[in-house]
Length: 66
Image 1 (tube, helix red, strand yellow):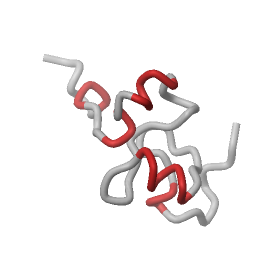
Image 2 (cartoon, rainbow, N blue to C red):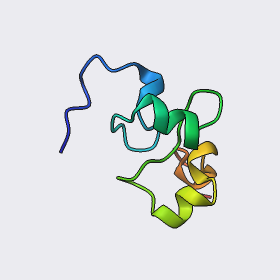
Image 3 (tube, rainbow, N blue to C red):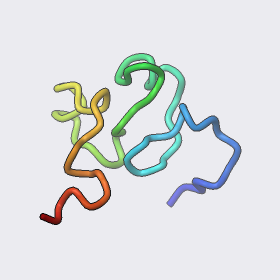
Image 4 (cartoon, rainbow, N blue to C red):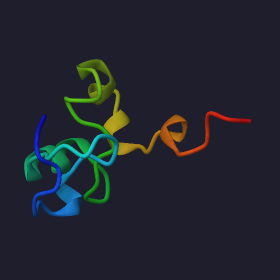
């Protein structure tokens, strides 16, 4: 498991799992300099569908409980 406590810019970390991502990955798959998924937490199919550019409501804290 990668160290997620390093000094990597917050915009270069996956918002879903905290793994570091490259600037190029953010530029290609993200939106507004943020990514909401990476190869560690999304399938390639979901990445190609644009899921890394959208925050997932199902991942929001407390959203699974009614």
